[in-house]
Image (cartoon, rainbow, N blue to C red; front, side, top):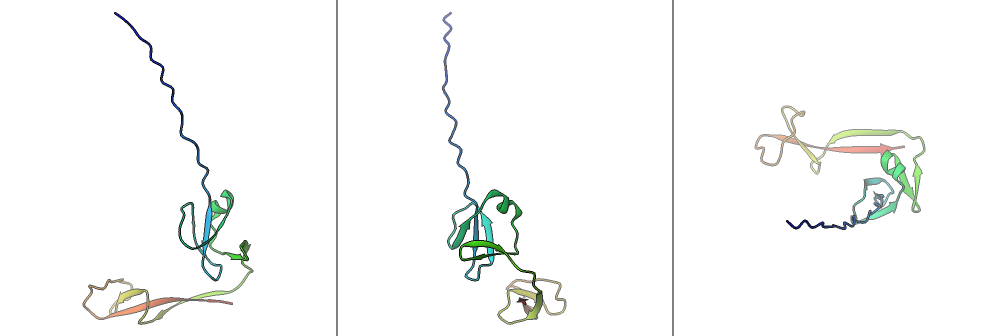
Amino acid sequence: MNEQEEVIIWEPPAIVIPEFRLYYDEKGKVVTYTCEKLEGNYIVIDKHVFAQARPDVRVVDGKLTTQAESIVITKLTQDEQGDVKCAKEDISIIVDDTYTYPSIKWKLKIYEF
């Protein structure tokens, strides 16, 4: 019996360090934190900022800043162009476009002072 030894040389794949990105809108507000390459404005951030994923930061002149203490008021208002459609008889029931009974559309308005 002929025994033969085989040697397998395995090269591990290269480790790719992710690029942590913060995408923001034209006003500097956070849109999303991700490692994916999406369309839009973004800045590269470190892993600690990425892990915190704070929604209260802003991007000003390409730099991350924390927002000064301010008053933020949110109000749900009826609006025909609203994002959320609810049953008219019970606004706690969210419905879709196939709902045939009377409904109301609502929109969230955010006021920052």
